[in-house]
Image (cartoon, rainbow, N blue to C red):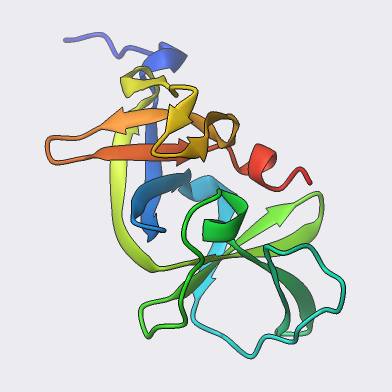
Length: 149
């Protein structure tokens, strides 16, 4: 009988991956409440440049952030593939507007390499690390850092 390795560094993590500004990024699925395509967004006067506005999600007000603008990439264009990734931060719902959704990728914690200080022109502080797959690199977002300001 083989022993089960309970080392936390080899624990499986699932990442929801998505494209924003041409970059492939991922977020731990445990941080995601839902993914939707509700774009009935109300503009908020004098909001930060990366804030698209707010929307009503089943009675809860959700602030929508254009993740491309926030990361210093190309802003999201309103296309049929756009989605809002709804995350919960400090008991507030935040929607991250992304260009399109990709796959769910499973990895182990020790597969994630430290993020370089600059990933394709993006400030490295927004990333926990980089996950290499056979076909591509996935920038793993530090959702707390992205939503800090």
